[in-house]
Amino acid sequence: MSEQFEPNIVAFLCNWCSYAGADLAGTSRVQYPANINVIRVMCSGRVNPLYVMNALQQGADGVLVSGCHPGDCHYMEGNFYARRRLGLLKELLEFAGVDPRRFHMSWVSASEGHKWKEVVEKTVEDARAAGPFDQFRRRQIDW
Amino acid sequence: MDLEKLRKTAAEIVSREDVKYLIGWRQGTFGYRAAPCFVEDAAGAAELTFSPLCSANLATYLTLAEKLPVPRGKEPDSRKTALLVKGCDSRAVVQLLVEKGVKREELVIIGCPCPGMVDRALLAEVIPEESAPADLKWSGGGFVLVKNGLETALPRDRVLAEQCRLCRHPNPVVSDILLGEPVQPWEVGPDGGVDEIEAKDVADRWDYWEEQFSRCLRCYACRNACPLCYCKDCILDRLNPTWINRAVNFSENTAYHLARAFHLAGRCIECGACERACPAHIPLGKLNRKLAREVRDQYGFEPGLDANAEPFQAAFKPDDPEEFIL
Image (cartoon, rainbow over all chains, first blue to last red; front, side, top):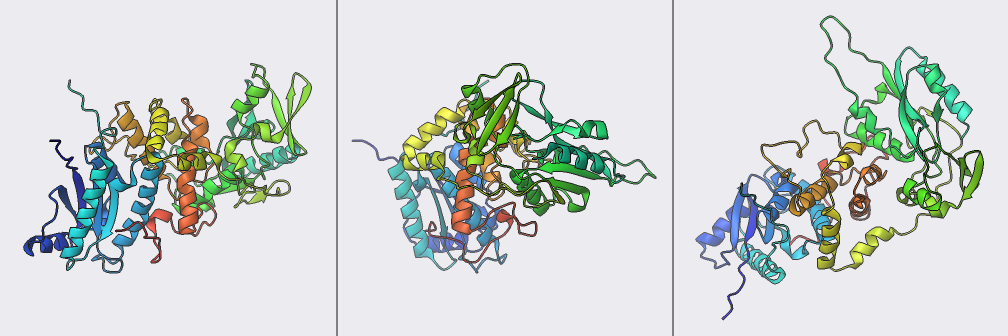
């Protein structure tokens, strides 16, 4: 019996919406895949595109960035900047040959526990379909 | 272009009290080269030239100028820098103005409408480069090579540089003095290099870039040649946090090139300086042009045209595309 590949996903969640949404999913006992490693950031606008690249280099098979819906940002406009930057980053990664299924962005509000579940399921499914991402992994040098 | 007029104008400008020096091009001392030069007096101005070999982007030197601390009791040097610009150089200057990298009142911009530069490598394929300096001229719709007193006509399509073939703004977008008549912008064909990669499937694209990036020496010539890579504290030099390791291997090279291209998203003015500087012939222009194309098509923004525009990545529109969002 061959074991199913379990992807390793790094998720950057904004403190005010998506993190609370994921929390709600937990308190509401919504079942979703456990492949997600959550990193809480104060705003999706805080997510430097280099975070995404570094996550992929350090062994993530997929990256998810999630923030408040446009117009709902705690800092008024942070997610608008994130949308512009990460949209371009997605284009760049795809152009460079990174499977577009490895990088996703979503808007999940604090009340959308069920949407969070769908987003995670989609992200994990996509990363699983794309397979392990070893070719970009940082070479560890043992001195 | 009338070189006499260029030299006369330059001599007048450098003799002005409020001008520190003028940055221009002069005939190189080897083969098909034109060297950037700093002119401080009339004798230097007499050496200036503007030929199809002047592809170096002089806007790079604006941010490289060393700013020494001002001794106590002395006034800071507020003299201006004069600079010759082609279409692409002027866009770099505008982008620097947008980012407040330079101040408009500290510049004297001399515009040179540019009918297109040659690619030295392509030129050397047609006629091999020798150590004796050769000159190049525009003539009709093509170029004329002047070497050892002999003139050879070269077809434009054969030797025109790639970034010039795709150039949409051959005339300076900003200038104090415009030398010569504006040139008629030419028909820009499809960007074959980018389309070719987009036509591949994702895994093949990775293989393509793996082949390219594996050759990278990490000399950072592309960063240093770029007129818009001028951060004092560059992420590549920073050790804590180490965003990109200094090790030369495929993973770090890829991270470096993607980061470099991304930092120029919405800023790159497509002058081709990075690709010209690359000793490993990595097609960096394709990465830049891909992002420039997305910025133009999806966001309707073209950098380096309006000095009052907001920097692309530090601005947003409520109706930016978001089809990619789950």
